[in-house]
Length: 192
Image 1 (cartoon, rainbow, N blue to C red):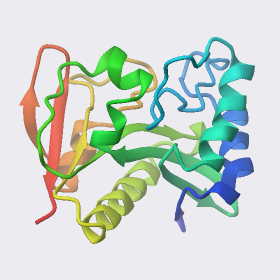
Image 2 (image 1 turned 90 degrees about the vertical axis):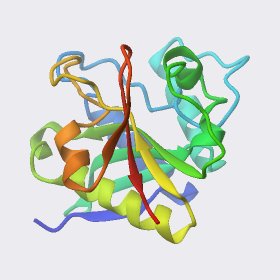
Image 3 (image 1 turned 30 degrees about the vertical axis):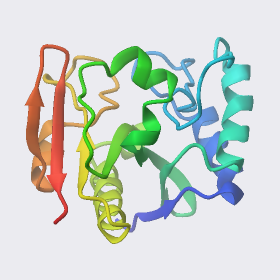
């Protein structure tokens, strides 16, 4: 299977938004449509993410201004996957971090954080997320990051989408459990 991974750029905004328009984020909730707007480097104060339309509009703005960082996976010219990956120190400003990530310690290391994988239902379990993860790690190393960090659930099936990725996928690419808390796992890959 020939999967092409591309770093998200402003000119890819229509591909990005269309992917979220047409791809269920969760296996059981087709209308969730998060557009990953709560997981970017923008300060969320004053932002309204309460409806699909508002999140969609914000997604256009965030992609065009490079505030959402990550990678799209293409198969036969169509987007089939997304991985949200950004500098950890930037992510502390986002709504998702402030709401859910208080168990993750901050340190002085240069860390690339991975928050989300969204894979088209027909492409799940075909290596798309692994291809995305490999590209994130390769680019992070070239960009001078010391670690790539991820936050998978402890148990498969915790949420139907498992958007945090699977522990086994991370382990396969050299990640180790950095911290095991009651709220979740923190896995890291050393890039040095």
